[in-house]
Image (cartoon, rainbow, N blue to C red; front, side, top):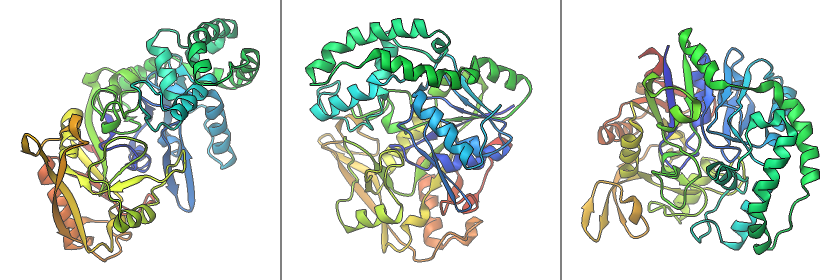
Length: 430
């Protein structure tokens, strides 16, 4: 048995969906362990492009069983819609998709509260966060306040109504103060009853399923959401998500013992992007940034909004390697950099205390990035299947990233399709 964690090493949107899909070829079980429908993972198979927001990225592999762990927050309407959309395209989830009875339910009032706060700029911390307005934060707040509704509660809708009444009594002053209207709970319960009927067969003790899979010696792939720099504890707080996005969260969010995890692979683009508010010192506000955005299709798969683009941040990548305990790197979207005369990398920061190679994560708004430039390349990379197929300048760039982080490169993605990939090491073969 091998349990492998795939984690974003930047601000999310690193291409985890493709990498999970690739590694699932040798995985028996794929587990999403955190986040909710704010995390869109894009899968491209042949000419088909599919975005999954809740269901694990391994769903396109017919033999893989997919688990949504207790660390997740689940919008029943989104989940049912996603199941139906996959079915229409010939991808059945029957008998392969399982939802933890301890995952929390995103109720219709959660997105409403999220949107009201963002519009008013009154998110917790007194600032606009730039959320996807999918109700993730308010749902996790209910979880932490011990007034949340769990997927297992859908077995008793009378209990759900009482829990929702309690939650709404707490949220009512907030909703009214932000200019919103109190929701119709009877309408909410009527809609929820329809979704519950569809979802109840999927709801189970998924931690026990994983225990059984471990005993059978099966390969388990644990899929993170968002990225390290959006982690609630380790990210650029308060501009972070509401869950644990680092590899350590896999054990808690999936219900698997930490000693069962064998390897952690971090995903990073050859450049950097960020969505929403918050510091981004290497952000490009010029034609180069716009070119990277267009070439990389850097628009949110959930919201459609343009992503902020910039140069790769090595202090941030070293930070991600440290807090996740990375054993390997998967470098994605190297093809997007083709045609640039030079490629820059932030290698250090100038701060009032002097120059540092570490990430000044609590002072990114004032720290000044120090760059090292590399010659670019003009060759199209999509047909590369081994490292030797890449131009010398691209290989030099990859070697520099590996040397500077102390983490070997396991995989290089040179296009969106499954086959547009250079695989140097299979984590399940280690």
